[in-house]
Structures are given as C-alpha cells and as structure tokens.
Amino acid sequence: MSKENDFWREVQLNTLVDNEYPICYGILKPGKFFQGGVPVVKVKDITNGIIQTESLLLTDPQIENQYKRSRLNGGDILLSIRGTTGKVAIVPDLLKGANITQDTARIRISCDITKRYVLQVLRSDYVQTQIEKDKVGQAVKGINIRDVRKLSFLIPKTLSSRKKVTDLLEIWDAAIENTEKLIAAKEKRFSWLLSRLISDKSHPRGHIRDFSTEVSARNRDGAVKQVLSVTNHSGFVLPEDQFERRVASADLSNYKIVRRGQYAYNPSRINVGSIARLDDWDIGVLSPMYVVFELDEKRINSDFFLHWLSSHEARQRIKKSAQGSVRETVSFGDFAAIPFPLPSQEEQQAIARTLNIAQQEITILNDLADAYRQQKRGLMQKLLTGQWRVKS
Image (cartoon, rainbow, N blue to C red; front, side, top):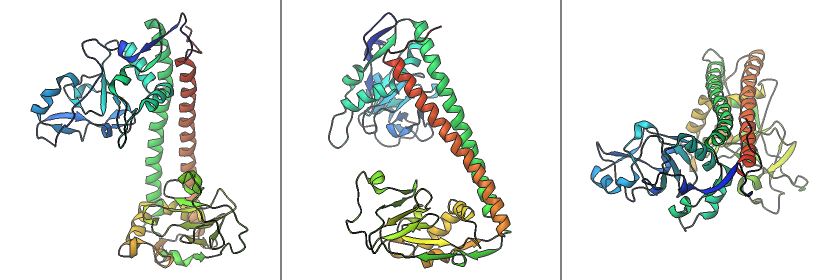
C-alpha cells in the first residue's frame, strides 16, 4: 500500500465504527424455525449484495435475547466471515431488531458518507484479498472477528474528499445495476420469444430422428490431440479449464471425433443440460462415453435446433426420456425419438434470425456489464491504494 499523504490516511476498520457498537458476530446456535420469532440473517441469505428477506430463519426470542449485542439496525453493514467469506450487504430498515449468525459480522458506522465509502472498500479486491489471506480453520474456513476489526485500507482524510471518491465509484455501480436490469429484461423477452416462436403448437411435428444421424468416428490414428468436454453451463470446454488438470486418457485412439457444427452430449448429464454444438474449434475428440450427432441441414436449420435445446419444452422432453433408464441416461435412440417442431425451412430461418438477434443483444449487454466491472476494479485499485486522488 502507498504511504499516507495529505489526501489519504491508513486506518483499521474498527477505528471507524461506533464505540458503543463494536464489530461483532451473532448467534452461535440460532435453533429451528420458531413461529413469531426473531429473523436471523445467515450467509446464504446474502445474494449479490442483497439480503433475501423472504425466507429468513426465525429464532426463539428467548435465545435471541442472549445476543442483544448483535441486533441489527437499518443501514448496518454485514460481512460474511465463515464459509463463503467476503459477501457484503446493507441491512434494510425492515430488518431492524433482527440478528445474525456466528458466520456473519455486523459493522455499524453512523456517518453516512464514511459508511458508503467503507461499503465500497469491503467489496474491493484489496480488502477481499486480506480476508482470503486471514482465513483459518479446517472443514469450514473463516476469518476471526479480531482480524475483521484489523482490516486496513486508505481513506481520504476529509469528508468532502471521501464523498467525492464514493460518488465516483457509485457512478459505476449505477451503470452496472442499470445494465443488469436491462439484461434481465432482455432475457425475459428472449424466453418469451423462445416459447412463442419455437414451441408454437401450430408447427407441424416430427421427431429428431427425421433430420439427425449419430456419428461414431474414432480417433484411430491418434491424429487429433485436442480433447474437449461438454458442460451444462459453457457448452464445449477444454477439460483442463473445467477440472484444472488434464483428465483424458494418454491413449486417445478410442476417443470420438467431433467436428465444427456437430453436436455432442453426455448421456448421463444431458438431463441437466450437458449438450452443445461445436462452434469454437474445427475438430476435437471426446471421451467414448459421449454421443456425437449431426444434422441434415436440408431439413433443419442448425440455429433453430440449437435454440430449441434451450427451451422449456426441450428440457422437459429430455428429462422424460431419461426417466426409468439406467442412471437416467439417454441413448441416441431415445434422444432421436423426441418429438420436434418442424415448420418450413424459411420459417425456421426467420425464427432463428430473430432469436439470434435477441441473443446477441444479451451478449453485448453482458460484455458491457463485464467492462464496467473491470473498469471499476481498475479505478478502485488506483483510488484505494492511494495512487490517484479525486479532484473537484
């Protein structure tokens, strides 16, 4: 960290809280649900910086009375300190009088400007790195409350400078939040379009076998070295990116070859979405357990089929195909027997084009949100380590 100067000074977190309400953790054993009891915030209740108030545990008021020191007020900052550490949230006014568990720290700062600044700092890479470094324990790791109190960082010396820095960082927060809201709206619209256009009951119906063929080409000469896997969240990936190490056999001669534009799925995981089209590589090999197939594009538009795979109808039909089979696996025969909407080629292309545009809009917005987050991280790195100061 840079040395102090006329703008910045270094502090420990405990020096900024109200002396009457020191940083503390909450109830050790909150007990089970108690009708009419006191709400208790657990680590799992903090999601994306927001406390999910709908499903809070209610504890016995008699137990809660033993932990008056950790009662909450609106505006308190919460920091998770065990398990999933480093989650931060502001307590809403409706949770005044609630409590927390031993896995969460309460930080009460009366000055609103300082509180807003500390909220930014606690979410910064600099403090999050300190939290990760200070974690101790075996089965469940966490940071001790005394180490929470000693978390150190730079803070502008004057309230006016503190406000300038915080206002600047909150501009990026607002940009990120607005972009995320727009993404959510676009995703909702995409889901509506997907259901309306793909699963239209007026479409004539056929089966996947009408336009698909299983492919079982093997890598007999071992010429293809690029080993791939299929996940339910990212499609085709490199196994070392998924598992942090190479998990393929040294002998790849029995692995199945997959080429750009072909599809593949894991028979025992297709029911959770492990099916994808190869778009990012020209060729690769997959474990022999995978099913590889290709489409007759004279009968089916590949983008139309790819969008159908993400639809509610596809998920339900695939799950139904898996029921009753060994380990709920789906053979290609079972998969190919699934009913499928088959409008004309022209209509398929029009639907695919509409959905592609809608999906591209979401991708662009996700990239924009990621860019805002990256910009804010870089800005915080400069500001919160004292390299930059905010001018009027």
